[in-house]
Image (cartoon, rainbow, N blue to C red):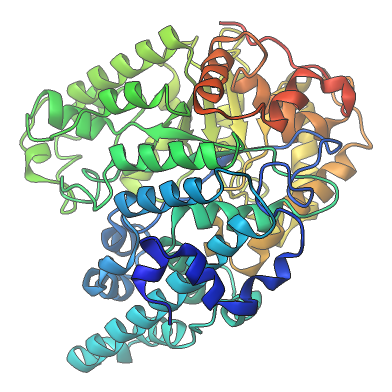
Length: 557
């Protein structure tokens, strides 16, 4: 096993050499450099993933997340005891990214970045699996009865079945069922990695096919310090996460950008309760010049986009929950304060032309009551000019129960709300019933004079998608097949192929990426001040006729 010093402090070349043939599969090309032909192709149609994640276990309170959200308390307890020192913090990753930058400053030559990536990936995987198994064995001795239960046995088997060899473990994952303890553990392994490794894992998974490459990946990270962490900062605070993602944006030549999270609970704690050390609004403002292109909101963690004061009037003890800090319980105006914080955010976003993405599915919350705050009704009084992406399109099970999706369609059909969009992230029926989803999407995208055909966008929810099991690796391919079928039909408002809009230009419109728009000028400044050559996605957006025969419309502001 490589030493941590070899991997993290000045020994990257030695680490790659020590791995010998592990990186030999990369081949002679400059793998992972921005123009590598296997992950970058100027002739493929514009493809943007508007909804992905690359956070790790030091970014979020993982133990309560598994315990309260995924309802696997046994695994949550294991993580509580897990030695988080094996997971790279933001500060450690910044140091690694700085060294990578120095290594490739003279040019991104054959193997250079690929060898460093493989060294970090394999080392972290081996170390994390070893530590996870060691923690499990300790708890099995001390809490034997817990691991004799059905859930305890399933979690124990999932961890014991892990291989410390990365390649062997990847082979074993081909047989993992959706939602199983094995799938959740697979998701957790992502949380033990370097964030930049997760980025390149994503590109290897989704950008090596012949027909599409991910030209632009939009990453969303999360701020659960107050909703789940009892007000305690994670080992990697949001400020460090911003710094990491800024460096990853630079390393990938503008292929990766991110949304900074805004947690109104933390803003209330800072502004009104005076018990939070950082202001989310300050973090958002700071990130805007550092490769950030939007703001992420997570209502199922316990806040509505609007109308929280009404929620508190109807249910005075709505926020009296065991996973929330006492300061929240004791604030009899907490709902009003949440609304005030959100109004400030919305005003700032409209003034600075910044889009918002909100989780809108009844999922990933600590309780059913909190998840209900994702309902479309809570968006009715949000300013009509706000530019919003409804993540997960209101419901991840569209063919089974489209009630939530229909409510969002009605909201989007309001002629005053021309800046409302939705994405396909974690639409699970794409994996287990693609034919049914194809039929349902055809109906939805034709309705309202083709409204959704012009506002529905591709998003994967990667790395959260690992919980869906082995099928998640084919997510992009599945949607390519679905939209290849839909391309045979005509849709109102779409002069060319529907797939061209869905995979690329709807997102370009939502993000307002057209040349000379305010968001585009911010990105152009970011590229020029960081020495980043013009990314390929810029060329495809500015010259759509070159390979798509489509045109990016100017989003009204």
